[in-house]
Length: 152
Image (tube, rainbow, N blue to C red; front, top):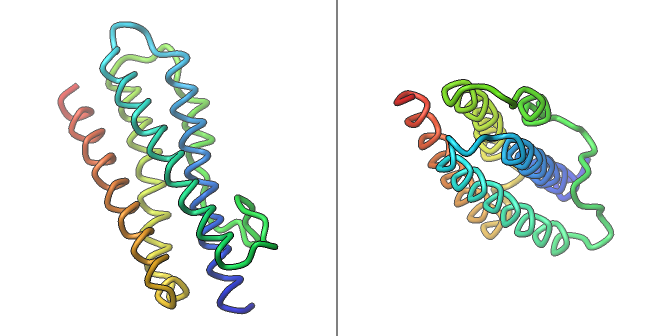
């Protein structure tokens, strides 16, 4: 497999897990009670963060080769935990909601770490910069959710 194809696959995996993250947060936003209104605002922010991530990554894929379909992974290498997480949200208490959100954030953080370890991204400084910045934002989000969970 050519480096270009591998790079596109890595980016598509990141697009997919960001899309899964959006779906997970949207599910919890629909189900969360008014008692946790602060979590609604936070989860909306992180859902929007993933929308922006997906848009940036899609633009990068299009720059590499406009014939590639974005959001589809040839290898499907990621563990798409956010799909499982969104089904676990519901009428749970604050701590349970935050534990499941943290589990989802663990998955996306791992996906970004794995992508950055992949040598294929090193070939393009623009891609590496974007993925690094997104990874830092994901880590910040993870740490914030973890702190809220610890405080719950």
